[in-house]
Structure formats: structure tokens, C-alpha cells
Amino acid sequence: MASLMDVLPPRYAGARLIASGGMGRVFHATDSDLRRDVAVKLLADQYADNEDVRARFRREALAAARLSGNPNIVTIFDVGEYQGRPMIVMEYLAGGSLEARVQGRDGCPPAQVLAWLEQAAQALDAAHAAGVVHRDIKPGNLLLDRRDQVHVGDFGIASAVGLDSFTETGTILGTAGYLSPEQARGERATAASDRYSLAVVAYELLAGRRPFESESTTAEAARHATAPIPSIHDDKPELAPAIDPVFQRALAKAPAARYPSAAEFVADLRAALYEDAGTTAWIFPAQPTPTAITQVARPASHPPPSTTRAPASRRWLLPLMLVLLIGGGAAAVAATQTSPPRSAAGKRKPVTIVRTVTQPGTTIEHTVTAPAPPPVTTAAGAVPPAATQVAKATGANLNLEGYAKMRTGDYRGALPLLSQAVQQLSGTGSLDEAYADYNLAYTRYELGQCTDLLPLLDHSQAIQGRRTEIDALRRDAQKACG
Image 1 (cartoon, helix red, strand yellow):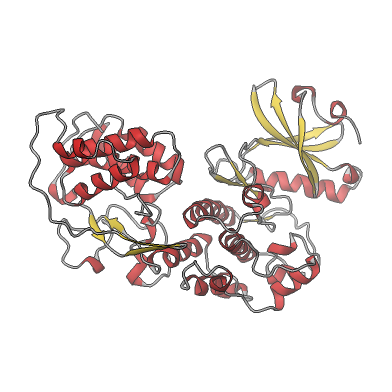
Image 2 (cartoon, rainbow, N blue to C red):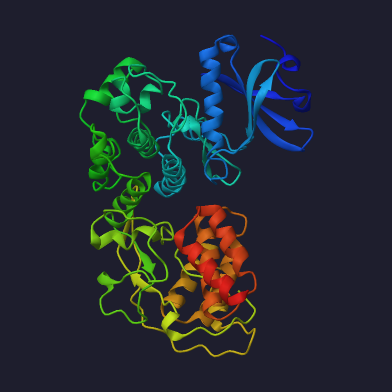
């Protein structure tokens, strides 16, 4: 094997090998010219003289470069050759891969899995819209940054519209455990094949095993094409039975029978995991005083994030399922300079939907039927008595206390509680911290305050991932606060 001095340009001196396999080797290096960490992918030694493989490697770079700029796709910085060997320089992601993160674990928390899946789904839908099919979606190609955000990488066997095909029908490319039935049969992969592979990843992340896991790769590939779809509820009984129909569709043998987009698959999975299992949430009604909670819709100014085909009874809940009360979170927002007044018609008031939260081995019932407390009237900057009573409570409980006041419209009473919650939870990186940040931001917004509102939203998003409701509130806050 040639030394690094022979295969890498001098500007990447000090590089270290971090991955090897497939078509190339990947090095972590510091670009001495631009002073940034990068990942450098080189064509593997055994392929250096194979012009067909060299052409495939170059096509990888072109396919991936077309997608650079998407927040959930690995960014390509440079494509070229050194010493006659093709080279791709891309962003370095310090969090490793989902494969390394979940190895040996018996499934991951559903909330975390859904956050990862939503980010991967966004990337895949964007790639498919650009005419790019990945063909090898697996945990090893889902890379994490320092904030645990997913970036889809290694379009090593991707095909792109406008580029000559480099995979003949009858050639199987991909990884056996995640192959779609059509790929296992040697047929050409499509966007539906990527969505199938994402469903296999979802199954593995939730259940701790792949749906068609076998002792040999050949047998596993064959089972994708011929075996009936297993019940994930049987594999992992603590998961809601309602997710089985979602996987039955997502893993359908016929591509046309699967979900038409990755986002719709994840939306239905979220609804099945949480709403059908029972959960506590709150939503923004279209009108200040709804007449029927079950018919509450999103405000006209905030369009739904997807055209999911989930039943109408749960469709309105899909975009808020990560901003839920799961063992101590809730949703709502805020900050401390005066903003321009808003009309009553545009004012959003929380409405609470109450159910029992069922999680692995735990059933928690949240009571939210307490009557509204009398109005809190305090001098500017004074702390209401309620804050003193729970001053020593945990950050999660303070968040719940604040949320309870928000629910009744007592934002002045909620403000000091949520401020303490954010302070106590700061730096934990937990979902409770994300929810408390969002609740405080919402409360401040309702009080016409602006200080630190946007940083609170940014921090909440950094923990729990991008949410439609965070984006909507950020837009409103920017308009109101400048």
C-alpha cells in the first residue's frame, strides 16, 4: 500500500485513515490552506487501474456534488485527482455513523429515532427530486455531526438523471441487509428502493434487529424478495401495535405499493408510535376559541409540512409529535423587549389534548383539567409566589408547572417558572431542555417580549432537530421583533 505522502496532496499532511472498504478509503485531515477539517475519499488501491471503476467513482462525486448545500446531505468541497487517482474532499462529521452509535443496542428511544429518520427522509426526498437515487441507504451511510443531526453520505453507487448509467440490469449493488426486493432480484433501483431501505433502517433502530436478518448475506437478500414482512410489534412488544401497518406498507414487495415519499412514511410512523399509543400534546387552533378539539386545524398562515395520507383524525397531530410532553416536555414559546402589538385574530392560544402516555414499561397519566388560576398581577420584574413554591423543583418539573400555566393563558405566571427550568436544564442536551427552551420562547412571544427569543428557538432546534412549529414561530418573531 502506498504511503499517505504518495496518495494525498501535501495540504492534507497528517491525515489519518478512518474508514476503508467498498470503492475507497476515507481519511480525516486538516486542510492546511483553508484551515478546516475535511474527509478525503480516495479510490481504493485495487481499483486504481480499472477505468470503469474510476468512472463510477467520478460519477459518485458528480451525483453528490449536485446535492451539496442540503443541510442533511454531506457537502462536497472538491473533486479532482492526485497522482492519477480520483479524490473527493467533503465535510468531516465528528459524530460518526448511526451504525457505530446503535451497535449492540436493543433498539433506540423512539423520539431519537424519529428525529434521525426525519432528517434522513428530508435528504432522500430532496435527492430524489433532483433525480438522484442513493441505492445503499444503511446506518453506516447516515452520518452524525456534533449536534447529532443526520447527514446522508456516500452516494457511491448512486445514479443521476443526466449521467450515463453505470449499473447494468442484473448487477446487484448495495448492502444485503437493506436491499429492496427489486435490488435483490438484480433489477434497477428507483427512489422507491431508497425508501424501502430507509424503512429497514427504521425497523432496526427501533427493534434492535433488521426485519429479514439471517446468518448469511445471500439468504438475507433473498428474504427481502420472498419472505413475508414480520411484525415489529412481535419483535419489540413495547412498541405500539399500530406501527405494524406502517411497516407493512413501507416494506411492500411492490415499489408502487410503498409510501410515495420518505417524509410521509416517517409522519405515519410518528403518528402510530405516539398518537395511537396515547400521548399528551397541545396544538395551535385556527380560531382563538375552538368549538371541538377533535376538529382543530392548523392556522392558515402555517401550511402543513407534508401531504401525508394518514387518517384525518390524526393528520393534524403529525407535525407536533416531537414537541410533545414525553415524560416531562411540552410545547410553547417567547423573550424581553417589547414587540409591535398583534391582532387578536392572529394570536395563537394553546389547546391541550390529554391522553395516557405509554412508553416501554411505563404508563404515565398527565392530569390537565385544573381550572385556570386567577390572573397574576405583579410589578415588572417581580417573581409570582408560584415560582418561589417550586424554586427547588427539578428543571423538568418546573417546565411542567410553567406549561400548566401557559395552558390556562397565564403567561406572566409561566414566565419565571420556565426561566428557572431553562437555567436548570441548560447544558443537559435533553429533550426536556429543548421543550423548556421552546416553552419559554413561546411565553415571551405571547407577552410581547423579544430578548433571547431567537437564540432559545435555535437551541431547541439544535437538540431536537428541525420542527415546522419552531420555523413558524421564528418567522413570526422575526416579523414582530425585527
